[in-house]
Length: 171
Image 1: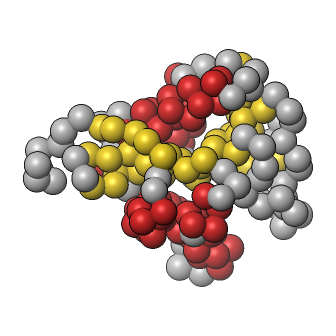
Image 2: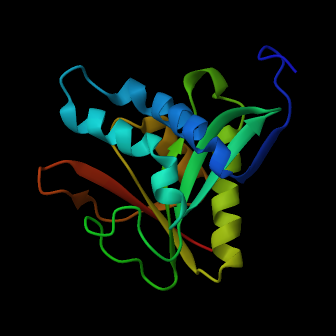
Image 3: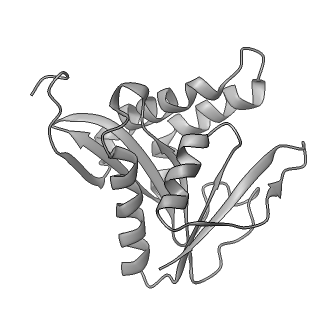
């Protein structure tokens, strides 16, 4: 199947041999949010690209169009990607992170399929709710979260003043 004729999107866990490409694709999805002098976002792109570094303690889903990776999402169920920076997960909580679909694969339901896979896994693991964070820059993602039944909670303000919009959805 060529890139010009998209097929059905398949979502599954990323295999170790796919971590590097899944990370590259996810970082590409976030690149539009990075300003030229925004060092924190440049560092975040490196963290996003490190799928192998988080796959052992989280679940990393990827979306495929035929054999091409067209997005990924990370689901925290038992531990955090960055345990020193984030509060511990509530025992009934799943937390979605680093949902990314590059521009050339958008508007095909890829992000929603990744979100549904995360919700299904959290439900199967006995979680009663799922949370996630977004930023002001990610307005399209926010609209999707709200359409999927996520509700806004209080913002999380990081020590440097950066604001994370917090969402929650019961399962």
